[in-house]
Amino acid sequence: MDRRDLVNPAHTVAQITDLHFGGPAAAAARVDLVLDHLMAMEPMPDLLLVTGDIADHGLPAEYDQARAALARWPGPMLVGIGNHDVRDAFTRGLLGREPVSGERLDQVLDLPHARFLMLDSLISAPAGERIDPGEITEATLAWLGERLAEDARPTYVCLHHPPVEIGVSLMDPVMLRAPRRLEATLREHSHHAGTLVGHAHTQAVSTFAGKPLLIGGGVASTVPLGAEPLALVWEQAPPSFAVHLLGEHGHLITHWRSL
Image 1 (cartoon, one colour):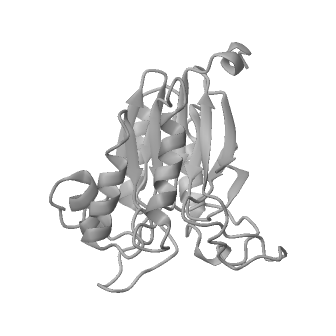
Image 2 (cartoon, rainbow, N blue to C red):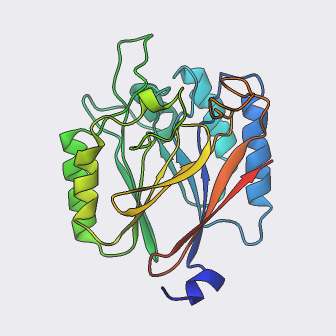
């Protein structure tokens, strides 16, 4: 480890997740609170990473509201899709284009000293329904392998669904299905520096494929441990998010905040 990475990170990345526009009454105000805090940082983070569940019901009006809120961010931004999102409406509302039939919304964003690969883990459902667990298709795995092979910079793989259980009874049944295929792909590339996810509505850390697995918290609400004397979904909890300090050589430090 180069200790200079600890003092002068190559990049600072703000991760917000589970915004749920159209869900809890205070969702939009909580997003604004977090963005106000991040935009007051000096210097501001180099990237805003949003790891899914932008909308609560996947409705066009919810994406209109989300787009207006996120448009305040003046720098690079990478927005992924979650289980509450609807792929076609997400594509129109946040990516600004017409959807392509069968398309997976896998995305790449490059910074000078790091690369971010956002994977689409949404399982499509009939209109008006939702499938909460996630999956990585063979097409996405192939795309991931190609992107990892083409660039040796430290690479952070991002998706909505955590690929491990985290001891939260409400969330563990709806994590990523068949995570071993993803793990095998990541272990083939030593410059994979960590995996950044959302979905679980809790600030947590684990490991996956031998590297850090970081869950960004939840802006809209928090899901506590079953043993805690709190509501199953704790909407009164302060909005939370993560700030990742990235070293030039792949060193990673994460700070969680609740406002």
